[in-house]
Image (cartoon, rainbow, N blue to C red):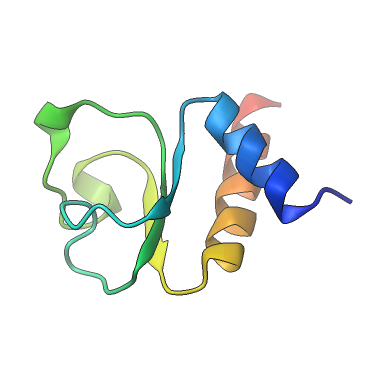
Amino acid sequence: METKEEKKRFLESYGWKVGERDPRLNTNFPGAFMCVEPHEEAELPTRDGSNGPWCIVGDDLSALIDEAHEFLSAMIR
């Protein structure tokens, strides 16, 4: 079982940003933290996942890391 830090490093190794929220991402949703795939500045702002990069936001960073790790792991297999 991977630790949260290992999962975070895995995401970051693929260019993901994990941690403090960029308020221009998923503006329709609250939260202090985010996990977002690599993206261009021109793609911002986004209201939700339908008009920009894959991104989740919320207040439980640990849960966000788990969800993003599961998503990316499935995509690269």
